[in-house]
Amino acid sequence: MRHPRPVATSRPSRGMGDVFLPAPVTRESRMNPVFRRTFLLGLFILVLVSVYYLLKEFGVLATITDADRLRAWISELGYWGPVMIIALMAIAIIINPLPSAPIALAAGAAYGHTWGTVYVVAGAATGAMGAFWIARLLGYDLLYRLFGKRLQLGWLGSQNALMGMVFISRLIPFLSFDLVSYGAGLTPIKTWRFALATLTGLIPASFLLAHFGGELTTSSLEQVLGTVLLLGGLTLVPVIATILVKWHRRRVIDRINVSGKSTAGR
Image 1: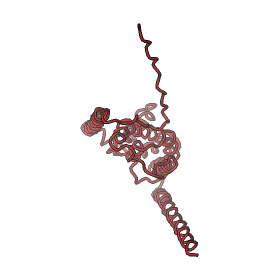
Image 2 (image 1 turned 30 degrees about the vertical axis):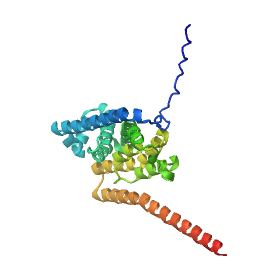
Image 3 (image 1 turned 90 degrees about the vertical axis):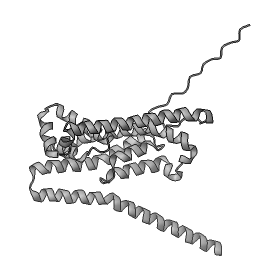
Image 4 (image 1 turned 180 degrees about the vertical axis):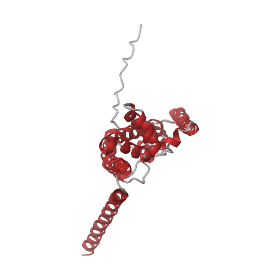
């Protein structure tokens, strides 16, 4: 007598915006996925190093790091110039040693602060999402399998806190845009939250860099210095705001503690 075959059930699909939560880990299933993820991560790092070496050997890196040479090269490309700006920005975000500031300056010098900002934002957002998903696919699952629930970050691991940290980091130019994108991919932040925080925080800095690039080619020294001072002042705004918020929060907590102690002593 034949036994009926078990009915195959389909696993629920996982959307791109969902939190990347791996399946429960057992001792038997831990080693192979860990080795596979480690191998892929090492292979990815090797590819990045190779690409950087080739760009340096063929002189592309020297062109990218020189805003004037890059602007002249972009201008010669005609309609392909914006495409090249977007591609270079994305590559510069994914490959950490490549600088992105000269590309943004060249975009502003070649296309003005409006369209230059559009191309810079498009390229930087594309690169940020690429770095985010590379870290999410190669690193997050590996860390989860190795450390499990020890990856919980308390209130810092909440979606709102992670989104706020990504947004603030985008407003501070001297923080590594690349490392923030890779680091966010190793956290449970949802994709749409990362994308929204990145896009909203990216626009002001991109506009300033593109505007500064345009000023370098069309304005006098006094206007350029004014733009530099404006850029420096706006850079300090999120830093000062963060310090003030932490100071106010600490004062509120101290008041609550003092009030609780006085109430308990009665």
